Length: 332
Ligand code: UFG
Image 1 (cartoon, helix red, strand yellow):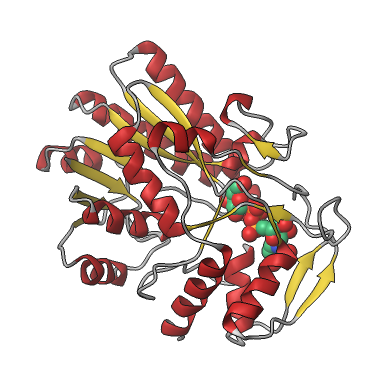
Image 2 (cartoon, helix red, strand yellow):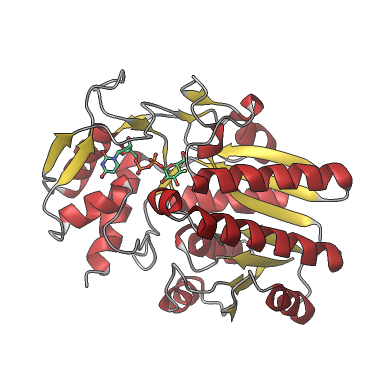
């Protein structure tokens, strides 16, 4: 089976390409390198011992999308490409709506034209919004999103539902990720945020390597185990494997799955585990809560286990070890 992976050189995309190749899928990559580096291609080729065709195209250009489909006999698409920074999306909403929506619509229109009907969408737990629950289950439906990035995910989910309602020959899988962290155990690929990181694990990495002085922990007065925020951190390799399972096992039709560990871990627990596993002290201070943050949420990951035979295998210790291993290998 030939799979087009959009955003295939990004954090989750690159790990997914590796797992797809390991499972003998033929992979074509499209990535405009907006938030990824071309050298990632060599690294995934090194890990897998395989070569990949890369289209450095902006998928907002429908002609370019058509060209990829004309050149290759594509059977399925895994769509990662998109802008993903929550804070930036609040400042530049039009940029987020235009890029994320146009790209998705272009791909779906071209798929329709070429009669390719298998689509996997990279969505997010953020679509549950602030719904008064801490454990998110797929049957809850979408809540009110709190930023334009999250709204693009919710809107694309809705577009996919409408598309499927209009033509149920589509096979669409929506995967809602919780908090992807960690890195490939080879230390060759991992997360490379631009500038000062917004997310917790990349920030811990910069403090551990001495590039930033201290971590700000946003609030310790939440109603959680130790007062700090609680999230469901999922190792990116487990997450990548979830995509392979979705391709192989998702039933026909439109299906939605949470991809998470099913367990909540607090910010302080993550910091303490990182310190213990890697024997490094992380300087931190408690500061004000960050606007828009929820106290606690994690996945109910039962559906993915029952229907896809997928569950996370890696621990929080693995996450901390692999993240640091990547950071050490890629010190600039
Ligand atoms: N945190 C800190 N200090 C930091 C960064 C984060 O204390 O410097 C805390 C946050 O307050 C939160 C937790 O660490 O409690 C996790 O924060 P992240 O920024 O790492 O992740 P979020 O849970 O805010 O958001 C992530 C992704 C979004 C996605 C969402 C899905 O970044 O893209 O999960 O639920 F939409």
